[in-house]
Image 1: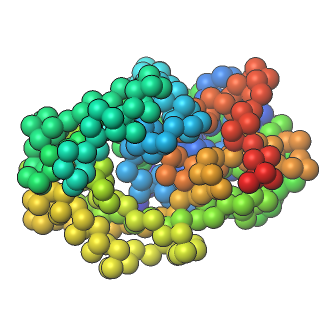
Image 2 (image 1 turned 60 degrees about the vertical axis):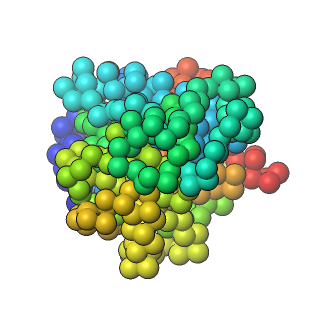
Length: 374
């Protein structure tokens, strides 16, 4: 599935002089970069080996949950919250530009647990996030069911935090369309086989730009030297007529994300030893189904729409890399977003845009140097 990249070739019909920016990778990070850089007036070309948004960006749940994903705080939480704010700006700007937004829903995230009376006033999570100025609302059995009417009767403890979701594939597609509306060129079916300073070798020949940005997800180590590993994740897409939940629900070992037309994402496994294998397995899918039914018993009646498996790119410390590649002046590596690609896509693009357009420094949180001291 996915969209044919050829439909995005309307910004510029052909490549003439070297563009300002050549982005390798047409997933959510590459498309976010293309949109923000093209909107700032730069001449942008994107090269995608397959179809725009056809990889992890197609199969992702699209959750925007910084307080859950970065529960311990730190720079990931700070950048994630800033990215949430930027999402609202992008959603409106893209809707005005092309007539369609990102289907952004910031109704919140609910985290529940099987442990009775969890998250009391002295709970470390609540205390930590409250001290940092972030909203956390304690939920009892009744208020949990306002968000999740069909949750298991034994679930009586939960919290509501800031966040929400986008439709992952659609959001990637709309970012790409918005980039094209700003005269970006997106070429699918082009494989990049190597890089030089400011240039890439491809199946379409040698292409150069003022700056090359490599944003190829789990395949980043194939082009640049970086300590990144793929982590396999599997999920299920199911359908059920009943309204199970109004917002994404995180349980102890499962998340359930409501989508359009009575569909639900059930995820996700974390398989760091799978290498580059992307095949769904019956064992993992059965485990997901069992955990999901334990949280929402009605899911035992759900129809399976699609199993899926993909590769998340992870770096030491689980924060992305946004930095010049050593030995090169005109190659930037952007990747390693792990489970946070959609959450951090807008702020990643804005960091790169500010660096290229306004000469702002790249944040040390995302530097190569942190690997040297790890």
